[in-house]
Image (cartoon, rainbow, N blue to C red):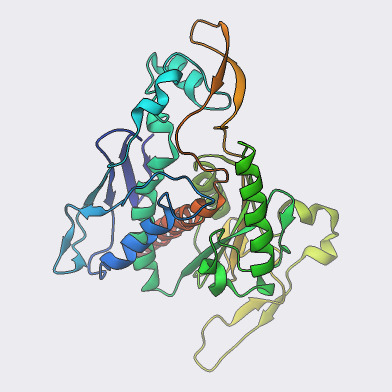
Length: 363
């Protein structure tokens, strides 16, 4: 499956060391102003070489829209796009041609397909997420028209963690530091830890929190298309993601129902908007698999990057014991560059759910 979505659909193509990464977005609503500067900015947030705590690979990641846009607005036709690869160092991977890298997709890809691209992982590389960021930027532009806003931030690196309550932070400060954490003091600690881990040739994981505001009531399906299930599937498809929770998540299991229930209240306003609300939001904006109009918030766990710049034991394609020392330019922590990817997948999911709901109501 190289396609995600039902109405708003993204199909991706490309490999890490191929000519380009690209995709086709189908189902983009017509008449949406296409802000190219914004789309490029979203890619810039994901691109390598941003700071001392990311990979040193230098790529402009310049997006080219090939179709679906006329006079600055979406036409409703498929939007094709490419981002050309310009800084591949394929020779860095020559020593991995017949060696399985620990915790990578080398063995599973080779067994499943009988062939694999050893240069940076090919299709399994995180570089493929470029296409998600382009589609996510387009989805954000469409969601902006209906007042939906999506913000993600690094909330934990290793043992260094923010409070779980996102209301305690000014999320507009997320982009003020390289690690994309809205707490400056914690951000400094996180960056110091990442630098330390990098110096040791090791890697570290963490958590990204995502907050979706302005989501209308009624998105999602009551059975197998639950909105949180769609969000979970989208997030778990991101490279290195190992866990997803929404609302109180696992922390809520220690509480009683009397503490967890979100009591309904009448929020009637002169304009009649959202007359019913809840006093609390332990549910994370989704009840019965359907959005209830409150903020949707979720947490996504990322494992440490599997490529270590130190010697590791492994086996080759013949099953013979060997050792591997990775070369090349790799992230010691994926979190800073994964923040825009999380936002992109949230945007793709919410827009698809919105358009699906709209289509059903029209039918």
